[in-house]
Image (tube, rainbow, N blue to C red; front, side, top):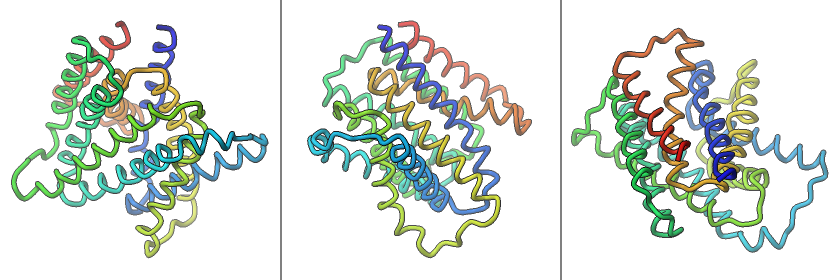
Length: 282
């Protein structure tokens, strides 16, 4: 039980960090693909530097044992981002984001089928409540699932599926630290994303500092916390706590950008908090 509780703490910290991404990204006037590429690039560079300085040794036999899962999780991580940004281009941000947040539900279903995790009644209620909370939060946006937006909706569902795969694949990987997992997976993501940004205008001046911040804190540190928490928690519980990401984004936007949340946003946020409490108190 203590292991699960500490796992919840790691997941919550990761969600709080990811919730602040929007504030940083607003200050960077470049395409989403370029920002994502450099966040994984600087994350990988930072983790590799720490490994060299600390002379970290990795057990090659463990890497070989998990090579297919490592490759699969790294590819899933990159494809999740690629398809999400395609969704944003093809439909509204509200549509893309809401569909993307079906990922915890897909991950819960996959964990039941592949990991044989028992779906508890309380866990299902918490997951449904948190998703309803997300729907209410994003309802202030232009959510219109009409025929013309189905291409973007499809991209969003594919992105959600790959995010769910990333989560479940990591539950199968054994005897590898969250540090090493993050190092390898960001390395694979770099290779996957590089072809998309070869012809893009490259960053200049102080924007490099923001990109380094996104890489070190919002990617390297946050992924390590997420994977550590995932290793200690059930996938369905992680799914519920994942909805703290948009909630923390709203809170941080209020603190730093003076964006006042609407009544519907507060209602949706309240449902997410209730569902998170159901998980943590279980």
